[in-house]
Length: 232
Image (cartoon, rainbow, N blue to C red; front, top):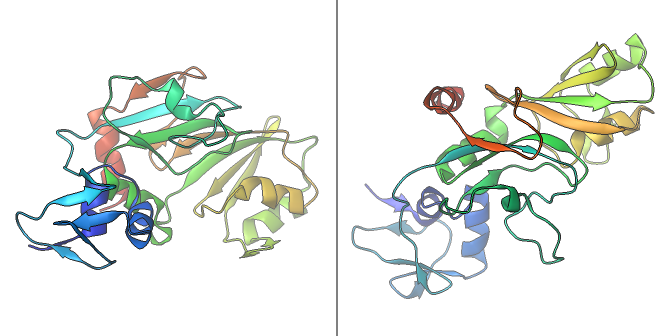
């Protein structure tokens, strides 16, 4: 069965499907020494090269979670020399990459894997994976304001999808199925409640739980199966 080059690269742990497509568009991928384009399919025995180096599937798939602290960039490397989340991960692991992002000033649950196919499914807009955030605000929003959030608010990149919100003790819980850049912060700023602190506590079926800040652990087999079940 033929396999498209971008799917093969993702399966090999190079990055998400979208990131692999960008590598192809940039002319960095060759098959049998020939630069390829999007949609190219591999045949048995083809050699895939990225920046001149062979790309082969990993010997095993790895799934990890991190309780990200504030002050770390969610990227594999940073041209500005800032601390990245990879500094908090074990050094003995093969190449793994973050699933999605948390901005520099946010903390909480961040998933890592070299399973490119699962990453693609978790991040694709059509999958609508729920993500849960706890947000510190200066004061409790009114019920009318909370209802506005539930129905969707207008941002510069369009109306947000309906979400779930509830006030818990002294912070706001927000459950989203979208994944726009800094979306929670922008939503709350747009209604006059700028975020003081933000922590992601769940990504689909995976819960942050009691994992200490700055610590990481491998997902259990049951957690991996739950992620796959989320994305059949």
